[in-house]
Image (tube, rainbow, N blue to C red):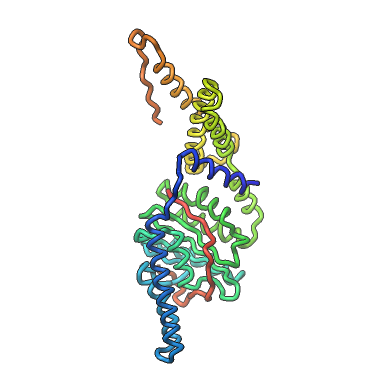
Length: 340
């Protein structure tokens, strides 16, 4: 039900904003172009191999290496690859030890990655290709996870291998990013965001029921979503019922905007309580409605010059485990991303 409501909300938002055509972002086109070129190169190489020219092994390595070169992949130096240089030695050692222990217990490979830059490429596509190139996870289980943070691009992503997509779902990954990682990154605590993100990922993979329940609660359809859906209906009846429709539209726009602001701001402020978020949505909607009504009354006032209207403003690495390597696992694109 939550998934259906979420999809409906996305459709309503798209219609309300008049998005009739959504094009593929340039960075995704670039990533697809690189991937297509590499696949084409691999097919050509295999055709030449069948004719008995070069070595099959060398040719199979060529395509993924081309992707790695063009996307500037860092070397896999351990379970913590701090290319951005934002983690202290103590934090890196702590993460390395924790992730190594979990792998020994479960065989699940979890790798934390920080990047200097994405080079204009979408972080989800970058993470997918990086996971495949490194081969994170066991080959027969595809049980690898990458937590990728690009602080200069203000983006984070959790890439999940095929074998763990049922445990660490896209919805869970999105919740971890939006409610645990991004709030810390927004406050400037990059190390804290990465640590808590890795902890929640590992806890889910180990079957910690308390953590799972907390994340499931946070994954519930937000109250702002219900408000925005109802508001959209009010907006659509604008031209159906004359002045009543106009009034409904004003209420709808105010409530929709208030819900959208709360939906964006509440997780970043650490506000998780359902009732509290409902109160914030109601307050914002009331303020916006008041502004809209004031402007409407001013517009239709016969003698605006006799009664001035006062304007109101709303202020509004290097790990110690040098021998670590991927187990040959693969990824199919499961995961979640976030920005701050």
